[in-house]
Image 1 (tube, rainbow, N blue to C red):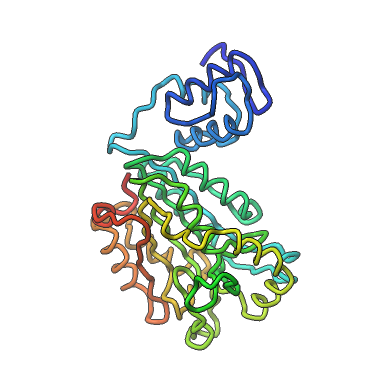
Image 2: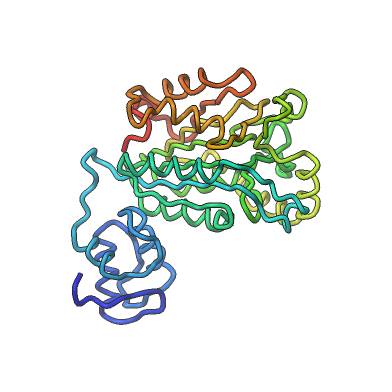
Length: 346
């Protein structure tokens, strides 16, 4: 928008007040229109940028001003779509006891999933390896929660290792919390549930996790998750898992105890998960894609697939060996129309 100043956190004045009014009109709450570009306004700007497919940097320049001026119309399908794609080819050995968790295809998985999302009208964001920290992932999901409302869709794909840590709150039947092994630390499944609770009613969340320990995985993985000797699985080695927890026990126990015991009942959105394997199996890495993501791309067929989410899961499952059978589950609010929808539709 010609003539408008470039604004960022710390800016003050009438232009900031104008920005705050336009954000509010667009459905992104910056707080009071007080002319102070603080943390709440920054979060609203970032949520708006993500929802409109702009660079998410919190800086209000010509493109963000133009998007604000263009109106707040939803996509032609009637909703908005935001996506986040995480791919982690290695982790920080300083946190994981010297283990770097090297994998070959997770960043490629994330890039391919981002391409699918963009082709279907999502405003995508991607976090790769060193950028995929626990705080960055949580912040990206929270921005999506702030941006989306009833009828909108959030798509999240994860490609990397899965892990487990002891459950100290007693809410897990197997006494283990499942995790995503992010670059700087593990992200607990209960943390994800808490993030899902940030989304409002009517939001549809689709999660695709090309990892082990996705869903309600059990410790049977160690006894029954047999894979070919030459294959690389996406599960953190058990000795590394135990050593990482022992070295960071205070951190993980404090996170675990900080999450409300009834967090799962607080999820009002509809969350659909297609995971890379069953509870007692291992998701395999590959040279070009993980086995799950490779099968997903084959079934998707560059947009040629026309079935629903359940059929999508079934066809992916049919392309994988008995040692890796993807799981399908739903949490939060029941939404049959979401499950019957074509995958990646907004």
